[in-house]
Image 1 (cartoon, chains in turn brown, cyan, yellow, green):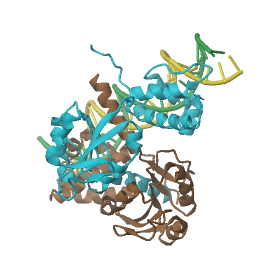
Image 2 (cartoon, rainbow over the protein chains, first blue to last red):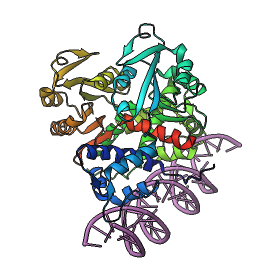
Image 3 (tube, helix red, strand yellow):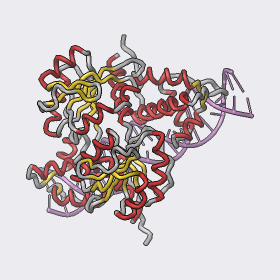
Image 4 (spheres, protein in one colour):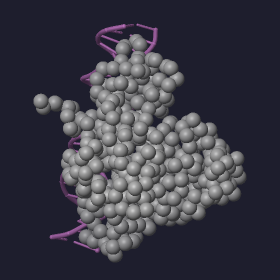
Length: 212
Length: 212
DNA sequence: CTCTGTGAACGACTTCACAGCA
DNA sequence: TGCTGTGAAGTCGTTCACAGAG
């Protein structure tokens, strides 16, 4: 069936993650209802923005009452696809890769890191946290066996493109790329670039241009 | 002197980091000239976009010839403030903090990590890479002594706000926040939020909404 | 002829403002 | 009355297209 999805602005999708994070925090505190105004203020946004963003995906609120925290969490997880568990692999078990393997945030959001890969024999065969590190040779077979569709790329820049190509060929549909380079990718492969140094540059720009 | 700075779109500033990264890569290969078109294509952008972005900061090119790679690198570093070295501290020496302490990308961009902090006595007194880990008590004195203006925050969510307040009070002007929460900050404190789990959510959204 | 720099046109995202339900 | 959902208005960022320098 051809589903006619009207395209949602990218910034709105990014904010959905923020809403969800905030809602989960409210739920932990036992809060059951929230208004667009409250949600907006906690994130330094406008109430209209919140309502418009949620409106792209459905009608989740009740006029006069606001939103049910629990319901909205469920709906937004559905939107983001985190209402089910995703199997993920981490490629590269250097410093960053190991940190990501120990990072609990993925698990908490419904991502299950099933394997890591590296080429260095000193790392292969060990475990980082609960995740076994395999040789890169086993990438394809493990990705296929576990039905992995998301990968985290934490390899040196020079190796990033080649690994990305192999991941795609093995069936991976999305790559979170920590290498500071632009990946060439076909249309049906999603790439999320994360350049930590660039984030610091943005900060120094702001400080530098405000201060002088 | 009141400097009349016409405001630059945020997305443009983010792309400046990308241009710089690409230019540095070209320089390593010995390439001396580049056109807006070449730069654009390597980043999947339009040539007009590149010219417009650079135009916010000055006239760096020569009609008919393009841009000098070396010159443009120098100019963009000036823009981003990375033409000089910034002293940086990392707060939190957990898994993520330690990975960031070992990360060489900061150094390469002109950031010098001078100290790390934690509250756990098992970590205090040791070094991670070449960076000494101090007790959080010493935050203020070390920040002041080294004239630190940028900080990386890699502490548990519960502690993030309190540490941010202390950093600001000690004179820090920019915080790269890896904790998944919104920091309350005065106008003259820049905060760069980095939520790794949220980036993965964006990916699963794309995969999930494209695939069905 | 090539390629930059830039006002003008366009499109995308945000804010406004209000109709309608609880 | 309080608050959502949503067209309409407004703002901001991108693309276009061309004058002018090399």
